[in-house]
Amino acid sequence: MKTSPVLSEFLKLAPLGDLWVFGYGSLTWLPGFRSSQKSVGQVHGYHRSLCVYSDRYRGTEKRPGLVMGLCRGGSCWGMVYRVSSAQATRVLAYLWRREMFNHVYQPRFLRVRIRGGGKVRALAFVADTAHQLFIGDLDVEHTARLVAQAHGERGRNIDYLSNTLAHMHEVGVRDPHLDRVLLRALALRGARRALQSKKRGNLKR
Image 1 (cartoon, rainbow, N blue to C red):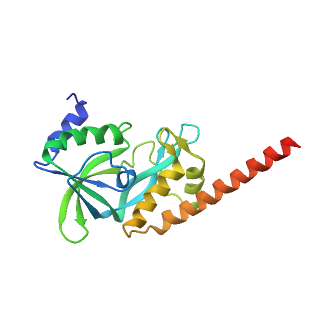
Image 2 (cartoon, helix red, strand yellow):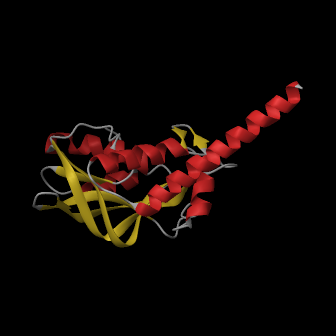
């Protein structure tokens, strides 16, 4: 398998044996790879945030959306996956293509506490605060407006957020800030649709 120089260097740092992967955004509900074990897990020292502009997957250059990143401070619940050693290199290459095409993330091995007991070192993608696509933590209104209007190659930004929160709720995890963002984004989208419908009605008269 051919790999980029950066990925080749990263593969040398991968732990021997099975690989653990920590997901906190779309990886929680659409990992895209098989795992031998999965569980809810928590990382300390980082929190989940809609802090990265998306001008491809969930938005465009003219109308960027927002995707998740891990930022310093607090803690974050997510899903942790165990990948067999035989599949580790293949999964790492897949994750590199998926998460690292614009290098807005820094891949790191973080300590994850698995719900029910036990700790593992898992690969996680931490937001690079020096990257031009990093926007940081925004207030609810600003975040919701970006989420409500964006649509990219992988669909609507609002669906990305909705699916992530729905999965979090299923496993008993709540994020009040992101819940407020989604509610506000849905309200903005509804208001926009109502206005568009009204304009179409006026044109028919």
